[in-house]
Length: 114
Length: 122
Figure (cartoon, rainbow over the protein chains, first blue to last red):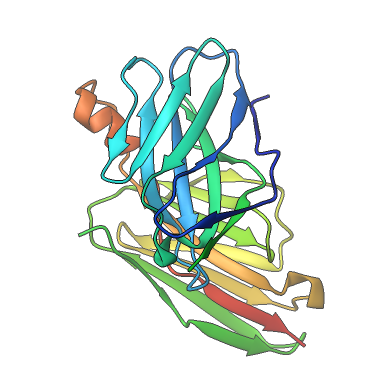
């Protein structure tokens, strides 16, 4: 079975600084997708960034980028120039191509200090 | 437009009540999902509908009854709930295409979530 591990329950970052959230996963599949979702106190689960396993290039979306290490099964999220609005719970998630199920990590609570 | 709309936002019900949660999307998605989420925990999958047919039931108690009347609408009927059923109920949707176009493939695998219904069972 696929598993997603987020080992840090909480992190804090100073506004305008950079922070990296770690995620590892375990799978025997070759066709899969990885996601980072953000859930602020407003509750809406928002897709931050996605990565297709077959792509070697790391995904980037504005201030958000990933470090995808396929051999190490690692998928970390880097947030640059952190803003107060980045404070939220962040979930790493895995989905393989043949399955409808999205497997989530336990999540990490990110706080941003002004 | 990547909007999934859930109503109501909040719901308080007694253990003998019958209520329904509603989820709507107009993105043409043919897969829809119900999740249950406790505070500070990840969402837990409950049901998956694909082309308006129930494809996955994660051994959810029968007091939760899903319904997909059409491709845009997903309901969750609640009856005789327990206090431990109090949680945030999230709906999500995704494409459900089998074409091999790379754009369609990734779109097929992205789930878009609603803002949820906060349910309290007294």
